Length: 72
Image (cartoon, rainbow, N blue to C red; front, side, top):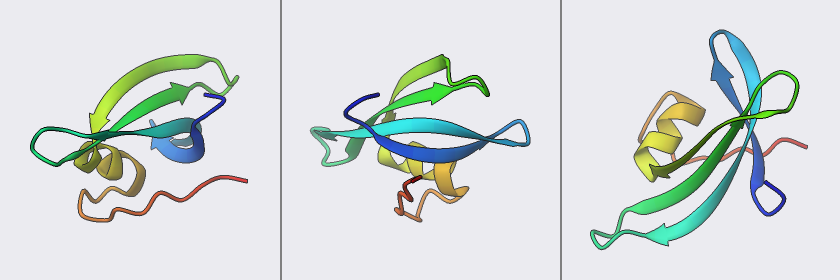
């Protein structure tokens, strides 16, 4: 979390704080990211390695929108 980028994401109707970090590309050239999700108390609730398209869908509701908007 300390070296990740702080982002907001929607989960069950509320905005949560998450952290993402670019890990590199797969053998197929697809982006891979680490993702840490937190609850309303800031406690870690999930950790995933996600393909770029899955991360962008989580953050933007659109796997083609490759924007990662930071918080603060």
